[in-house]
Amino acid sequence: YANPLDVNHPLTQGLERLYVRLPHNVTTTDWRDLVVGDIGTFQNGATPALDSPPGMLGSVDFDGNDDCIDTTLDVLSLPLPHTYINVSRLDSGGSWIWASELGGTGQGFGWLWHSSNGIWFRYDDGTTDFRNQWSGVAQDVGNWHHHCIVLHSTSSAECYYDGVPQTLDGTSGPMNPLGAALKFGGRGNNFSWNGPIALFAVYGRALSPSEVRAHFRDTGLSYLRRVSIPVVRKLGVGGHVITPDPVQATFSVPAATVITTVSPPPVTATFNVVAPA
Image (cartoon, one colour):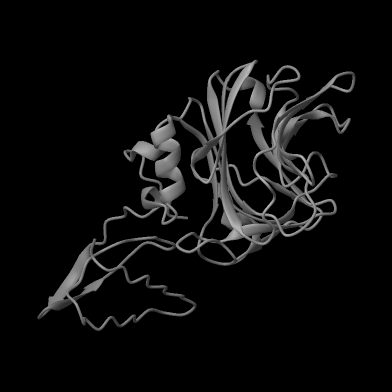
């Protein structure tokens, strides 16, 4: 595949993982990390889907029963501070959207929506269960949202909802990573998220408030769209272009330009027309 990640973009600096759905055949290999190439192991029917916020590339849908995706990211290897971001839509219920499970026990460390108590950043080692909560954000079923947690230390974290910082009600215990490989869509193969996830990112550094806001606003994923398009032949005001497959690209043309695609099948071309700022 053609990796569209722009490593020079400010929002790619410090990335440990960036999971998105690549825009071609709808298979499990389309949902991959663009930093080290981890596809993840799909468990129990987690399904790549085309549904996503405007401008994004698709998602993975979880059924709220036992779906999850195993990754190779060991949360214990991450430096402090670090940052977790997901773009997701809750369709019903409320449960873990990502977690690191502790030895197959069902305990672990992660982030979840509680059905009545807001956002939890939870640490559960089987003996102690700490639920650090931001209850000021009510569940919004059926709509896409951007969630970010910046973990500064084992006792300090910030939570952002659609780029806006939230007030922590109080901490009940440690916030340090626990377990091993991170999963998303559930904690183990239970407590599964019900709804699609369009993006999951982990940074090995603390994002600043302005960076979190920029990430929230960048639903067009500009850091995945900076791919050069070589012009093969010019014909008057037009021309032919050739691209690797798959590719996300941006380019400018005069107003009222007619764009025609000529490619061997199977090819899907999607054009997002954006007016100049």
